[in-house]
Image 1 (cartoon, rainbow, N blue to C red):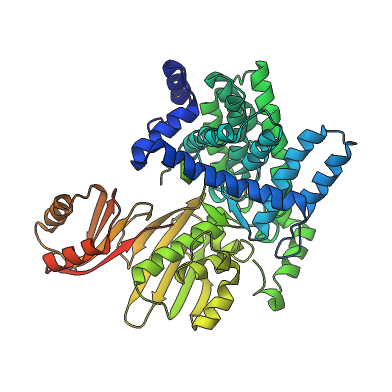
Image 2: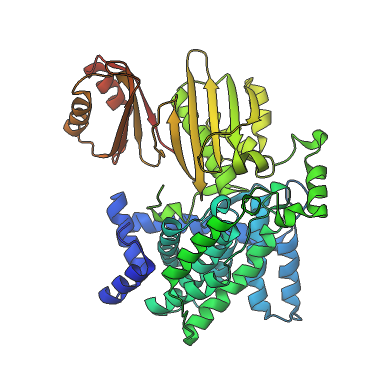
Amino acid sequence: MSFSSLRELIELAEKEKTTIADLMIYTEVQQKGKSKEAILEKMAEQFAVMEEAVRNGTMSPVMSRTGLTGGDGHRLHEYAEKGDSFVSPMTLNAAANALAVSEVNAAMGRIVATPTAGSAGILPAVLVHALDSGKFTRKQIVQSLFTASALGLIIANRASISGATGGCQAEVGSATAMAAGTLVELAGGTPTQVGNAIGIALKNSLGLVCDPVAGLVEIPCIIRNGLHAITAQAAADMALAGVVSIIPPDEVVHVMHEVGQQMPESLRETGIGGLAGTPTGKKLKEQIFSEKNSDCGPAKYQSAYEIIGPVMVGPSSSHTAGAVRIGNIAYQLLNEEPLSAKFSLMGSFADTYQGHGTDLALLAGVMGLSTMDDGIKDAKAIAKVQGLQYEFTKKALGGNHPNTVLVELSGASRRVKVLASSLGGGKVEVQELDGYPLKFSGERPTLVIRHTDRKGVIAELSGALYKNGFNIARMANERSKINGPAITICEIDNSVEETLLTLLTEEFSIVNDIVLVETK
């Protein structure tokens, strides 16, 4: 990221007499090495998924897999069409849009995490609403998503977008602030007004707890998305009217982080406290996850598509999309079809894995499925067909992120143990590989090289990559002992072909194995 605070971003936009969206597009072009046209085309595809979710959930009822919620997006849309509402019918349709996306998510349909799946209804709701107003073109809407991503990147890096670490204020609150600021710039507001909208929106989300009933991304998540879509619009209008956030937005973000740290664990996505801890909340959990129904239930941020994305099958970016990616990394590292899998979960993962579909997601990942694969919801049936044996257990895994899992995979000739965490918004980080403390995310093409430790081997490996035109973004090495087994991780900026792996294996006799890992 070329900007680390909202103040810096706002001042840069004012100095350059440009928009926040254009600054983010320029940054993305520089980081990805792709043309502006290609960057915009990908974002247009993201918006198409958002709009499809809105239309699906407002035009007809969408029910969650549990049957606990559903149809409210359509219900509210139909009510607004009658024109008898207290709130303006047009405004009410924004809330209907948000309910619709969240219901598609709860049904394990395809949505875009913005910045997370739990808050994925808010930004699509207000932007589709803006498109339907006829005041803005589709091109303007797509470009505004880069405004949202720039704002979200700063919030994510300075605080959190994970309910497990910061409560719902980190998810719904962040999404509301992003949406408010985006609407201001879309309407022609100044960068300073964008900042005021963020401050106004986020101040009124502080302290919002994450208390999903039965661990599901349904109650109160769906309704919160609907109401906060209207909050985002109101905050944008206040800022455009000249209302100022007396507390600067960077300070509000900092306070959100502090409040999140002070929240008890029971109010941070564990499905224990708050509404989840009410008598009705506990009763619903028992009904949904009784033994007879148990198989039927559901770092640092740099790129725009880490905030406006991933495109995923719901219901949770941390617990579903992140879990798929962790499983998929383990699958790639095993480098053969798995025969057995053991998943040891801790923290929020352990407490809510059935409600969030984490069990389905991890299984899908270790069988090679991606975050947007419709087969995720059928992962257990697919595993049965493939003969994959699996088990889920709960285990203390040290002082890692609450959403952490140890994946132990075995194939016909190989085994692998991957300790990894889901950090929020679908972003993941491997903490350990086969007991070696090696951190990597798989966001860039990553070479995992198993070799014998030897003096000068790191220099030789990096030299070989340089000679073949590859730039190393990050490199790490761990060994069991001097001249013993070792693993080197090389994150590469370029795309990597299979021929490179063959070349390195042939060139270095001490290399035992090379695997390419890249998340999708």
